[in-house]
Amino acid sequence: MRVFVAGVTGAIGRPLASGLRAAGHQVTGMTRSAEKARALERMGVDAVVCDVFDAAAVEQAMRAAHPEVVVHELTDLPAVFNPRRTDYTGTNRLRREGTGILVAAARAAGAHRLIAQSIAFLYAPEGGPVKDEDARPIVGAPAPFGEAMAAVLDLEQQVLHADGLHGVVLRYGYFYGPGTHFAADGSIAGEVRRRRFPVVGSGAGIFSFVHVDDAAAATVAAVERGAPGVYNIVDDDPAPTRLWLPAYAAALGAPRPLRIPTLLARLVAGRQVAESATRQRGASNQKAGRELGWRPAFPSWRQGFVSGLG
Ligand SMILES: NC(=O)c1ccc[n+]([C@@H]2O[C@H](COP(=O)([O-])OP(=O)(O)OC[C@H]3O[C@@H](n4cnc5c(N)ncnc54)[C@H](OP(=O)(O)O)[C@@H]3O)[C@@H](O)[C@H]2O)c1
Image 1 (cartoon, helix red, strand yellow):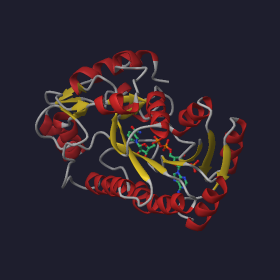
Image 2 (tube, helix red, strand yellow):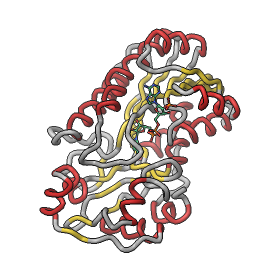
Image 3 (tube, protein in one colour):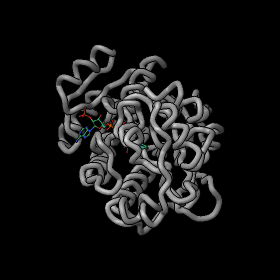
Image 4 (cartoon, helix red, strand yellow):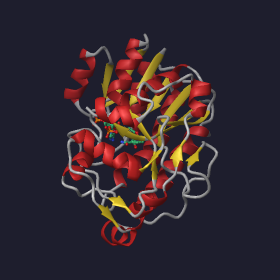
């Protein structure tokens, strides 16, 4: 199939482009950088140099590529992730405005399917520990996370209700692997080595992880099959922070994480961080397994942190 990937140079975009090429698809990838475009060409991707906010150029590039499927993996988060002070403005604009531009261009170019990224850590902290796609998302979170969450939900609605396109939303778990914040050279690894990423309270907040190569493989599956709708793309092992964080530190060769009271975490890092660390829910991948026929090569972060951190 002919596939147009926006965000092809990112942490997931790179393994996605390789996976699509290996499966025999023709890939056009969009980047703002002429240098990255040359690297894409070397891996067999037809590169277009374009900023998503230049709507006319995006439409022109998309018409020239004439894709059957468009994949949206755009984000604009800083390399150093600080949950309290992260500026989501750029990513929020990509999600709201950028998505609209991609939807319009995909339709103009005659694509029939649109796949876009979302997050699996958006479920309201209520009821059971592990959520399927029908569970209620968080509403009313404090800034800046609340605005970021509203932008994610806006993206999802634009994709799922895009006239004339089969919209697929992939709610990815926390990425680990090369190029991610959890990679051995990533910013979260740095915080853990400095013992600045503690277990908060009882450490009951549940995280669902996914290796970027597994997320890419799931996205290839979603290009090829599956009904329109929402899919959680996470590993088989949602786990509380008190379990995964010490294992992650050990995999890095870092000292054991500190434990701090929830009240202190609220004061130092803000309400949302304390909330995620103590009350976040995990996500179930059963629908993706059943309907996309996707299984993660790293079913658990337990092996993934040891052999797949990158
Ligand atoms: N990281 C996680 O743990 C995680 C978890 C769940 C979901 N997600 C979501 O998955 C998606 C992909 O994440 P990632 O970690 O792969 O992102 P990333 O590594 O930061 O890559 C961002 C991509 O977006 C492109 N981009 C940014 N602004 C652009 C613009 N104005 N015009 C054109 N392209 C632009 C960049 O292209 P150039 O720089 O080459 O132009 C790059 O290819 C994101 O939406 C993210 O929110 C991430």
